Length: 411
Image 1 (spheres, rainbow, N blue to C red):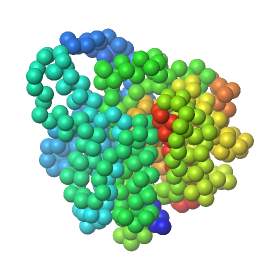
Image 2 (cartoon, one colour; image 1 turned 120 degrees about the vertical axis):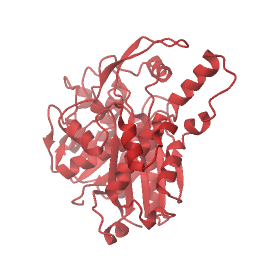
Image 3 (cartoon, helix red, strand yellow; image 1 turned 30 degrees about the vertical axis):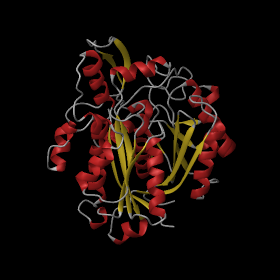
């Protein structure tokens, strides 16, 4: 089985339009969450005010310049939020223009919902304006595979290209699938990650209806946490067979050592600590790291009362009482919940944390909750000697993924 190197990272979120901007913001304790008002529309109610983490305008021109031709305007925002970090990760890897990008590279992106901005605009046109015609590009913009298709065309990649959709675990499933294809020798490289653009009026109203949204901010593991905050953006990791990367002299940013995937088969919205624990145990065993004490835990950490308490229980089940000595970060407190794109963004930031030996603080934290008795990194960034990163991703429907990485200095 091939070892799996990470040779490129890319990110875009409310924290910035590159992995370095995102890293500098999160490690400095600067957040991207701000109060937003959903404006009134002739076709639907507005006036809803909630905290969200939105990507700032202006990145489209840089994306078009990097690709050498206008592309962004023809894509729904969710696809742009995948293509922009894909370009960054590819450039960092040094693979752009490399022969491996022909048939020996896969592209797998994860998205929870796809082109909602295009879909809602089409519904306004059809139901609100009573137009008999939809925009002719509605279907290719809405489809969940629009992002991977755009990346394949932009970078002339002819290998396996497809999208995964498993709600909040989507990009984690994409990463695991790409890694498995490299491990088995099906491809030499895989562009993996995910994105989301769901801060649309209708989608925000839908999330508000299930009472999952905080009216204040995202406060993972804090005693007064009261819900999640929607974010938008995406992240991409360039994975590569270790020997292939080494042979071409690539800079190796980390290694994906193991992954675990499980289903709770329990409840559509309530988490199961046992199901989460099974995924983490699989990842740790796959990586040979179940007994290691140098693990940085990047929690799913949505800031909802149920999720954070369940994740604590699952961590204790896997690592026992020694989990109290493993540092825990939760970067959704800075960039919000990107749904399908969250796991990829958190993994990219976690790899940067291993490289720098610095764990970013959980933002907006106020007071400890006895039900979340973990070694939470709060207040300010903390120096850590962690060699491994455990990245958790848990989704509605009870879909769980855990990823175990080593940093650039190895395991």
